[in-house]
Amino acid sequence: MRSHATHDVRGASSSWTLALVAAACLSACGGGEGGSGAATSASTADTGGERAGAAAAPAPGVYRIKSVFSGLCLTVQGGSTADGAGIRQDRCGDAASQRFELRQDEGGSHRFVNQGSGKSLDIREVSTANGALLQQWAGAPTDNQRFVVQTSGNGEAIRARHSGKCLDVKDWNANAGAEIQQWDCAGSSNQQWRFEAVAAPSPGPAPGWRMVWRDEFDGNAIDRSKWGFEVNAQGGGNNEWQYYTDRPENAWVANGVLNLQARQERYCAAEGCRDYTSSRLRTLGKGDWLYGRVEVRAKLPRGQGLWPAIWMLPTDWVYGGWAASGEIDIMEAVNPAASGGNTIYGSIHYGNPWPGNQHKTVGYNPPSSVTDNFHTYTIEWEPGQIRWYVDNVHYATQTEWWSSGGAFPAPFDRRFHLILNVAVGGNWPGGTNAETRFPQKMEVDFVRVYQKTGG
Image (cartoon, rainbow, N blue to C red; front, side, top):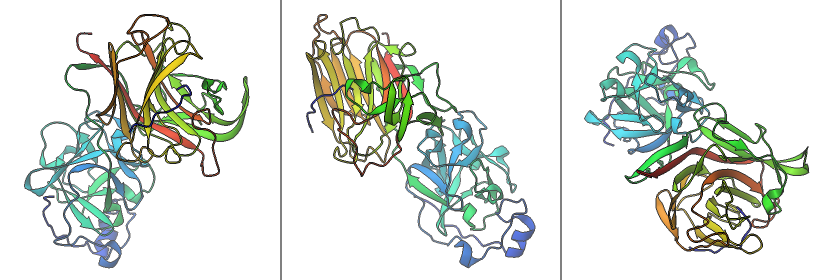
């Protein structure tokens, strides 16, 4: 991530009629209000009840499913991949545990398959009772994994095929962590859902690659067996403005996502004071690879003076100082969604030690926003060749480089490790301006490393 001049290179849903439950029944038995006595009256006017012949279900695709009542999204508890893991509502994000693929199934119904676990939404114990909880489960689909989706008020109702009951936020609980159950359909807001389309993760590698290292960030903390913090105010050799810290304010894991956050704040420590803080994580000594495919799915910060990067440095520096021992930039963006637009860059650095270093850089503009959406940034690194991809779209290949410290394919024939960081200011992006809003963060959904089968 050294400073350099850039080179700009270029459903088939069935209609179903649902009678509203009378207010008297709601008061007595819950009527979709969570079944715990937190009932309110319902009427055609205030619930926007289901309509016969209403619009078809959302098209098959990948969605976040948001409660109209609470504004929170369905999520697999703890990002679990286990059968029986409960479904809760939580703050909406882009974790795989909140992405559900809507698949058409038999009889005009649909299934919801979680992208993190590959398992389907399922009514626990195939129960037809009010209050039966929603979970995930694998195996061949059964009717308690089939749902009918129908327009309802300000959103969609999701009705379990086997029971005829609707998915419902239990106890009208607006807090994160509330359970999801089934209850008699009443058209109330805690039974209304909005489907927010999200890009499906790009497919993995072609046959012939095997996974050797991964972090899906499904826990509650950064895994120190995989990542180390760099703590310094050196500016990365690029006159950057930030102090890299190991504080939770700058780096944390939540909802299946690693967050690396740049903050505008006066911060003083052993190496002096800076007006910005951020985080820089690396796998040095914990993940070091010679050749392979590296995939990082991330959403980038936005603003003038921001410089997010996903990149690699040599572990052993056998060919000499930077850049004689090389650098591989999987993805860099400067001033994203500001003067840098939507362009990302893939680069290699090589040649002599600084200031005799060389580089090759290729820019690419993904078809959708890199700051509003997650994209998968990938390199495939083999002897004598490095290829760059975004969402499996191949946009660059490099086959020519050199090092003053050794013969080709040096320097890219030694172990490298991965670095994730968000820099502020510096030689390439320049400074921030009045339009830059802090805090800003890079969100990382996963990191996956593969190597060729057989070596």
